[in-house]
Image (cartoon, rainbow, N blue to C red; front, side):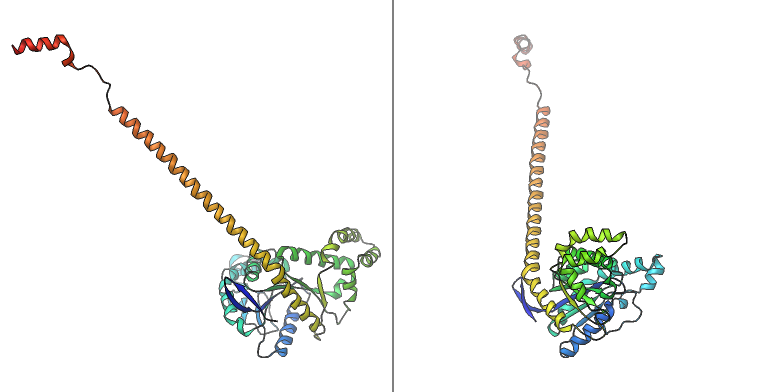
Length: 338
């Protein structure tokens, strides 16, 4: 699973970062606990490196190598700044993101000993996905090591086509915001078989038939959205999974391997292209600044020359005939000398 990445002439084995996201109640933390246990049992000498980014979690069900709660006290943030629960989570993430370079240093130091780095994000998905700190963490991480988004869905709640479409909307928004390899984890498949969700994703007509059986007003919105979003999510990787039994672990690891390959084949070249474009913009900006400086110097030198010329002209008096050139005064002078 390890692949070699060459950046700036330095080849190093990079682990795969797994960013676990999902709506509240979808079972993200339980999923991370199961994923961590399965990966550790599969290779006890190379266990996953686990990070908890949820400052408000009360009981962490897995051992975390880095825990945001050790850095930021969620309740103190809420009290000190007079914030509510969501505002305190966002502020805690903002404070933590200012030290994220230290997190990357720790990951880089431990990367030879691990194949996977797992990030458990806050239950309030919008707090992480659409905040500045979430963007900083995601983009910085993706530019450093191969990164895959694992979007956890509660398949038991998606039996309604309206709820299913809401989850697909969120999945597509995260996919096109991060532009990272994406895997949908249909969690709680031990309660409800995930086959129907896969079929709705792949077969538009089957989903429309299910929507037509709904009599609510919002079903009309779901029908209209399906016309637009079908092309976006029909080819997404999706796998059924049970955080209780571990069912679907093999399929999940295959999807993660495919997503890692996509990172190197599609995301990384695009990232290099963006970096090159940014470098060219910076060079162009520097060249324009230098040209403006030269133009200013030329204008200033011309202005100084004109001022100097004006001063020189004012210091030179008008030329008038000398008294010595007056015949009368010259004659008078001659008489007095006689």
